[in-house]
Picture 1 (spheres, one colour):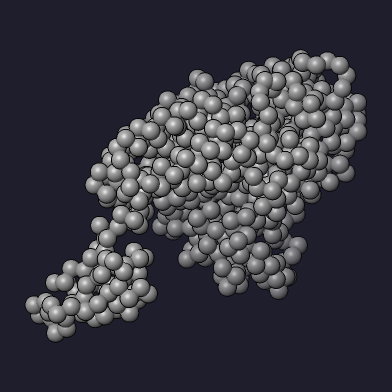
Picture 2 (cartoon, rainbow, N blue to C red; picture 1 turned 180 degrees about the vertical axis):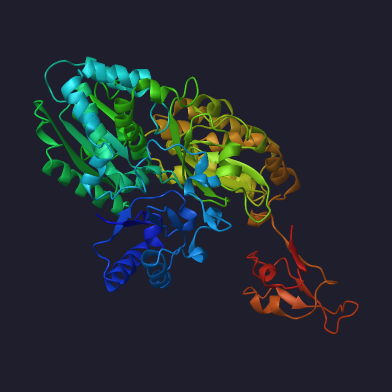
Length: 604
C-alpha cells in the first residue's frame, strides 16, 4: 500500500513539454530517498489545463504542481514527499489561498465542469487495465451481456438522448436501432469508431484515447452486442502515436482478461477490435469516406442513401460513432438514461467536450453540460482574452463551423442554438479570436484548408471551394468590388446545396458566418482598401512619425528590403535626422515596427 501517489500527465501536450523527464527525475529522487515502496509515480492522460503543462498532482493531498521542470523535482521530493511540506512556489497559483492549498476542482477552470467522457482522464494510468476496472470499467459490458437484451440496450441509449458528438448530432440510439433491425440475413455487421480528428485546434478525441482507451473499447463491444456485430474497427490518425500505442496496449490487455475475443463473460458473445491508421485526410472524417479507407481504397465519400446502417463497411450494415460518443456509453448503461438525460438542454442531453484554444488564457480541454453559455466557457473557465484585448469571435466546429460574435456570448451552447446563429457543434474545437484577428483572413484560412482537403470527387467542392478561396484572396488584396461579395455569397449557397458530402456542404460556413456578422470588415477591405485589424499585408502600409523618430537607425538596420532611409528632417530636440519608409520597396514584414523602442512606427 502506497502512502502517496504522484500523478504526472502523459498526454501529448505535457509530453511535448517534457513530462517524461519529470517522471524519470521523480523515480530517481524517490529511489535515492528509499521510498520506492511508499510513493508511486503514475503516468496519466490529460488533466485538461494544457496551458500549465507539465502537470503533476500529489495524492492524497491533491496538490497541483504546474509548469514543472526537472530541476524542481529534488526539492519537491525532499520537502513535500519526505517531510510533508508543500513547495508553494511551484504550485498552481489559483489553488493557493493564504496558508491553505485548495482543491483544483475549486478553481475557475474546473468548478463549472462536469466530467463524463473525461471522467478517467488524468485520474488513472491508461496503460493499466486494472485501474480502469477499479473505476467500474467493463461493469457496463458485463451488465448488458448478462442482464439485458440487445433491444433493451438500444432503448436505454435512445432514452438517454445521446447524440453523436462528431458533428451533426444524429441520435445514437436511432443509428444503432437501424443497424439492429435492417438486413437480418445472418451476415456480418460492423462497429466503427471515428478517431480521425481533423479539425485544426481540436484534440478532444486524442485526449480520451490517450487517457482512457478502455472506455472506447468497452462501448464498442456494447454497441456490437446491441446491433449484432462481432467485429469493430477504430480508424485513428497516424499522427497520434501516443493514442495509437495506448490503444494497442488496451486491446492486448482486454484480450488477456477475456474482455475482447471469444465468449466474453461466458455469454457466448464474441467481439474483437482492430486498428486502422489514417493518413491525415480531413475528408476521411466523413463516415462513408472513412469506411472506404478502411476497405483499403482511396478515401472518397459515397452518395447516401443507402446509409451505412444499411450498406456500410464492406457493403454490410455498419454503425459509426466518434470517440467522445462512445466514451459516454458505459456510464449511461451503469447510471441510467435518466441520469444522462438530466444534464443538458431539452434537445441536447449530457455534456460536451471542447478543445479551448486561440486567444485565451487557459488553453485546454473542457467538459461542460450542454446549455452552458459561450461567455461562461470563455470568460470564466477560459480566463478571458489575455493582454487586455477584446473578445471578437469564437470559431466552433472547425472548418465546417462558423464564427460567433460578442452579441451571442450568452446563447446556451447546444446543437440547435449553434445552427440557429450560423455555426455548428462539430467535434468540439473552440478557437477564440480577439481584436487583432481579421475575420476575412480567418475565413480565407479555413477555406484554404478545405480546398486542400477536398477529395475532388464532386465538382461543387473541387471547383467551387477553389473559386470561393480565390474570391477571398481577391478581397484581402484590395482588388474586389461590392458585386463580388454578392457573387461570393451566392456561390456559398450553391456549394452547400450541391456538394456530395459534409466536407463540401459545410465548407462555406466560415464565409457565410463572417459575412453575416462582420460584413463591415469585408466592406472596409473592398471599399476603403483597408484591413481594420492590420492583418492583410496587401492592404497595409507602415509609416514613421518623424517627430517621434529619434534617428537611432535601428529600424533601417533591421530592414532586409533596404526600404528605410534617413531624411533631411530633424525633429525638435533631436540631434539626428529622422527616417522614412519607401512604400515601393517595403515588403510589409513589420520588423521595423517591432524593433522601434520609441513607438514611432505604425501600421495602417
